[in-house]
Length: 295
Image (cartoon, rainbow, N blue to C red; front, side):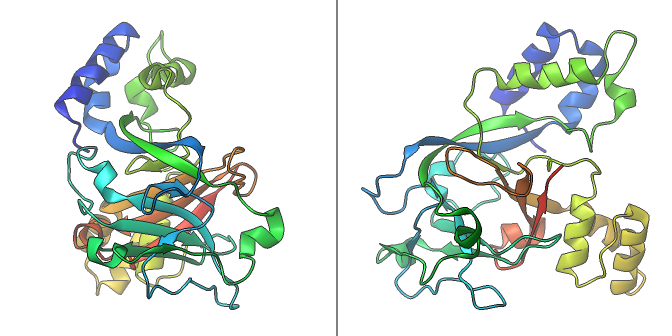
């Protein structure tokens, strides 16, 4: 949850300006530094390997377009040029070079998906590729409109599902004032289509539990205590490891519904990609899980 020194000072300033000193310690302790990516205009495909949402990816020469279990091409959601993100994550969890590609199939509580990493060497012969057939989402929604993406560092405070209300509320401050604090923190920045490493949008705060259950092949449940029990059983009675695995789940990417692109996840929801911290640090991007949240 480390913040850069610049963002730590900025958070302190915004807390003071918005009269939230009563929750300052809690907010400094729980704030996460995130990477946010916003649309920077329609994609013209004049270059290979820039960060991009939707459209056609720049895949390495021998890369196969991912298919879902029915043989239908998955939808290309996102490609990230990791060199463009250097310096935006103080914990240095991402490779400093190469590309990440995000694909998604039709969505249910768990989404068929694929996350691919390509090294700089693999990207030397990358070319823009079209899907071999209409993708699962194109069949439903029509073609998405590709946009270039610009990245920036940002600060994410605990959202509705994660915040401790006892810490942020007093006789003068309730949820509405806390929400205004978040707006002030964001300022006049453009809408973020993609967020990395922040708190997952949702209502129940169970995303990390669900992700851990999926990654370790356990039956899903919406109840955290049951999730820990099932993980503990999977780890031969090691409850400490079960709790640690949930705590170490990282939100690799959250992709919002976006009218300009045409993304519409359920009822204006979000698409989530999660990964274990250990797998992230070791570059095992094939070990991810994907889900969506929609109110």
